[in-house]
Length: 167
Image (cartoon, rainbow, N blue to C red; front, side, top):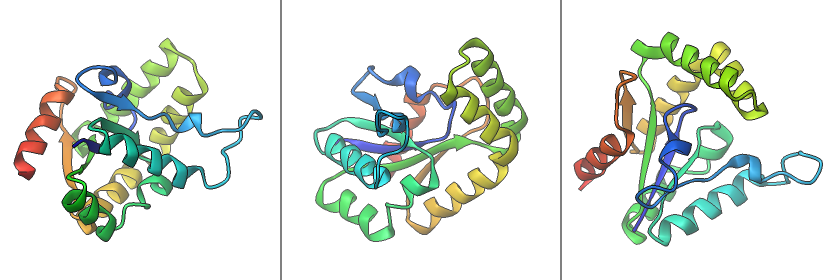
């Protein structure tokens, strides 16, 4: 089966998507014609991610807390045991926080999309608290974590290694 990978902005979700059975499930696709999030978008988003993982895909999902909070300990254990779906969280280590924010700023300057601006602004103001919250969530729910401690990394290699360690 596949995996659900909670990925912090800038880890390489979009870059890896389309390669080796990876999908970057864009939360922005869960908006109405006015650009507003649809009602219960986070629940629908997680359901789509679970369905794709059951089909064997490695699905990157957003690191918004309203998304990953759908994965309680019991849900994670059920996905892992009944459906053989691995759940991982990928994020930068505190050693690279400043560099990471700069990286997101550079990404926004190269591609000034609303999504990239939101990621950059959020990281500027909340990277420490967001990562701590994600790490705490992963620990409480027995989710394997992948911590990026350098900008020179292979996301696919890190994920494959983490999945092997789970077995």
